[in-house]
Amino acid sequence: MTTHERPVDSVLETIGRTPLVRLQESPGDVQIYAKLESFNPGASVKDRIGRYMLERMLERGDLPAGGTVIEPTAGNTGIGLAIAAQQLGLDAMFVVPERFSVEKQQLMDALGAEVINTPTDDGMGGAIDRAHELAAELDDAVVPQQFSNPLNTEAHYETTAPEIYEALDGEVGAVVAGCGTAGTLMGLARYALEHDDSTHVAAVEPEGSVYGELLEDDREEGEYKIEGIGTHDPSTNELFDPELVDAVHAISDRAAHEELARLAREEGHLVASSAGAASVAAERVARRIDEGDLETPHNTVVTVFPDSSERYLSKGIYRSFEEWSS
Image (cartoon, rainbow, N blue to C red; front, side, top):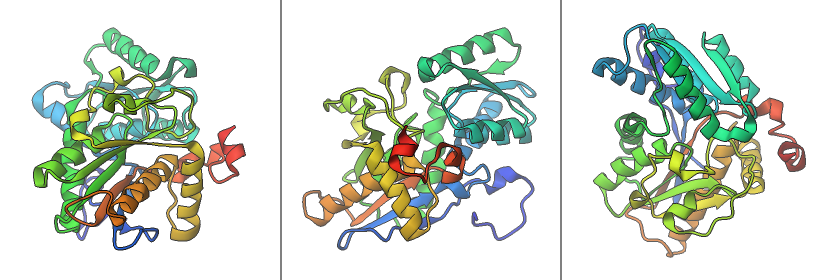
């Protein structure tokens, strides 16, 4: 559970202060730590931006009181925004590509939001277009647009990063995080580099995603099973700043699946494929540090486990790789 010593007045006040846990599979003297974001009330890292974005938008007048929030989302952002919207007196509507988790869509509905599906083949680009069409049809409707809104990055700069640095007394050598919108990594990176500009920053994407092209890495676009991270069109991921990133690690579906199974079996972490990918990449970075191939200010690597495997049980996340990936 999140760390709260006194009763609070709203579920929004339970967002953040999630545990930072050392992973047992750490090479040599290098320690890997994971921020467990499933401990948020909506069970994912996206609770942070749900609260932060809506509160700031209301304060600035960008979002009218009692208005409607419309967001294209693969699910977790919808849940985070739905929790915040309900508590802040707003309506919520989410546009979700069909292939994404049924569990997430059911939870958005349970939180009082309207869910609209778009064709899988249209990808997130199609969901983004539909969200803006809907907003144009309604009065007092706003698209927070997690893929381009700087408040996404700011939420992690103001909350996630300081929590990590407080827990480790500022001794962070590298930060490694999956990139979907890229808000989490960009917030962590900006905070880390302000603290020590020699901190290593690594992005994580699935094989088949093309974030790496922004760092002039060779990438072959293709389909991937890992959810919540990656992109087929970097132009829709406006928050990603390649100037803040030292490396982009492309992780295969198989490697992510094997790692999420290992994390459950050996370390008690019930996490999803994006966390499996992040763990694989974090271990790669830690091994480079341990072998003297990568110089960092401290022998610590921090990553983020965005959500729980329970959201993906209907997709066979703990079955064989062949069953899960089919």
